[in-house]
Amino acid sequence: MPKLRVNTEGLNLRRTPQIKQDNIIAVLPLAQEVDVLEEPAPPRQRIRSRRSQSTQGFVEITTNVDGELLRGFVKASLLRTPASTLKEALIHEAVQQWIRFDRGNGLEHEVPFFRFVGEFWQRSARISMGGIGISLGQPLSYRLSSGMRSTPDSDLLPLMRSISATQSANAKTTTGAPPSHCSV
Image (tube, rainbow, N blue to C red; front, side, top):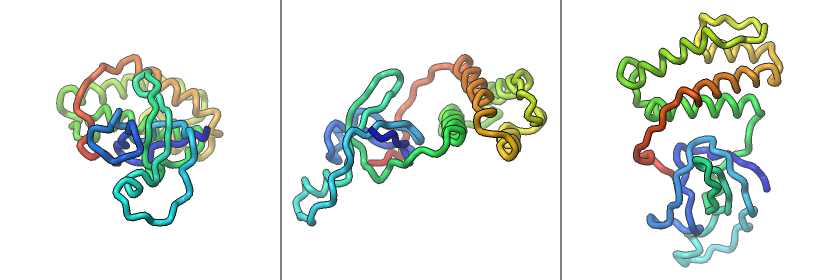
């Protein structure tokens, strides 16, 4: 089973390989890891039926959403091959922060978002950088990009795990509607 990543903001996981509104199981976020169960069938000769046009390009996948293993169909064209472990960790962290900040709509001076900024700076002071020579006075993106230029991926993974673990421990569960811009 090849592991791929979602390459769009919100990818609809469907019960059947058909584009129908009552067919959506879940909306998968950007960079969500999925296991492809079968490769897409080779393109057939164009048949003008509605059913054949709506089922082309889907693959069957499994993925873990909120601790539950889900199985369904997604458009293959909206999946990508994973990057390196470090890059995927950075992408994952960026997407989590983007979701945490209301998909980019949260303002840093408003409740609850200003608290997230404060948590970041508190964590920054506590994180041990393991001697890789990154200034704690710089923003996280600068610190990570500076460290990546001269540091092997394996040395930065503990840092990423530390940041992610601290955020997970501090995160509050929120509910809300699925993103308004979902992809097939």
